[in-house]
Image 1 (tube, rainbow, N blue to C red):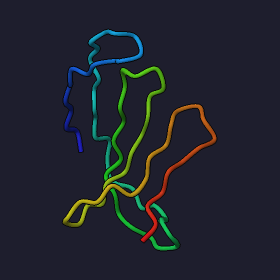
Image 2 (image 1 turned 135 degrees about the vertical axis):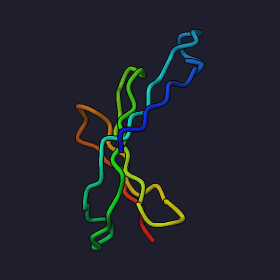
Image 3 (image 1 turned 90 degrees about the vertical axis):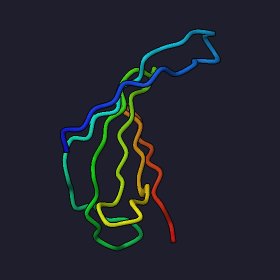
Image 4 (image 1 turned 45 degrees about the vertical axis):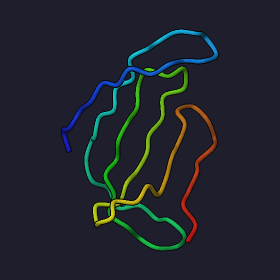
Length: 79
């Protein structure tokens, strides 16, 4: 929690290079595939549609969920 990185990303659709920032906000307990897991919540700002993703706190730190800001759409890992 508290970690922050800025990456330079090519926006192919706009033919521009833009900075994206990834910031880890904290640990949350979320439900994925019917199971409760502890996961780091991270936010990505910079793209046209900012997103939030969750990565398990336990090794091997698996990406388990992605949510797009302002959209009724989430991607959840299914075992």
